[in-house]
Amino acid sequence: MGSVRFGSVGSRGRRRRSDGHGGNARDGSSERPRARGDLTAGALAGGGCDGDGGSDATVAFEEALPTEETLLFAFPTPGGVAIVDAALDGAEVHAAALGEPSALHETMRGTARAVNAALLEILKPLSSAMAATAPVEKTATRRVWEAVGPGGLDLYRLIVTRADDGHFEFQLWSRPVDEASGGVAAGWRGRVFGSTTPGDRAGTGRGALWIDLEADRKPGTRGKVLAVWSSLGGVREVDVSFFAATLDATVDRARTTRFTFRRDADGGRMAYGPELVNVHQRADRDALEAVTVVSRWNSSGGGRSDLVARGGDLRLDNVAVLVVSECWIPPGFGVDFDQTAARRTLAGELVVLQSHGEPSACLFPGPEIVALPEVGDEPTAPTAPE
Image 1: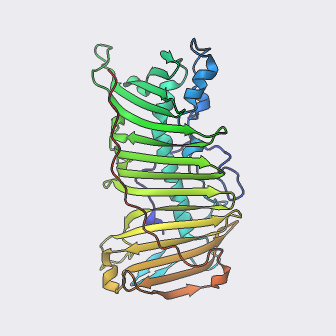
Image 2: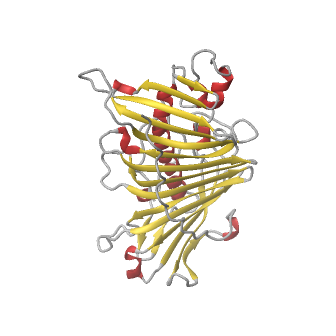
């Protein structure tokens, strides 16, 4: 299903690292692009001790920021497999043959890479604002960093505050540097806002991150992103919504779509959608269908992916809902069962159009037919600093 990739938010190579949530784990490596420099809070320590509580006090504020370990998705990874395309012929999808690498697995793997690349890209300003500089303002409940961003184009101001209940709030602002005068233009623009509530152990807690991509002032970059995460009780969850967003100047259509990820000791689940795709790939079927893809896997890395398509030209095939399923097993993530099914009405019975293999071979019985919750309203930005 090469055409069902979420490619509009991707960015080029970032550094890959392992962690306790996905890298080199039992169910495969996390999909992390390569990165230049360390974006984690541990690399953002200021220089020397504080005059207000010592260096440990500032570390607590630094650790309130989201990190790669907080946000990145971890999807079971093969040792390098070819992409296998699937196409719709009428109401019938020709998926990967039994034993061949799963097309839907490869689609979700590429999606995890694209989302992670976008998250890494939008975490950059946080690290740039704090790297190699001590706070310019320190109180018992507040730290402020200022730094000139990459290329000397913007002045960053990062503000982290601690509330009475122990949670932290952070704001990253920027304003252009006036090259002619060497001064700074008036008017701050919000780039990143969020909050974190630490858990009872290091690396645990929950929080939210709101990003204005247009503050980057890069050609083609537009839209906004909301990421909500939780890592508590051995369960890690990430929910990312893109509001008409893209980091790619070559993309002519920005996306409003949602991604969800959940992982625990028993396995994981990832879903995304809606993605507008022409699932027919035929000259007489040019309307776009709304596609949602859900993957589930256990601790071995084996799992199942279900693609659900609605709308578009499916009505011409007398189909209201089309469901394409592939079950896959490691290490090559080959297909051991696949099925194409349809509902003639939205609430109708699911009718199997074709299948290969035995349903009992699948680790998860039955498709998961879901519609992701609607992408909600954009959060309200805080008041700009003076």
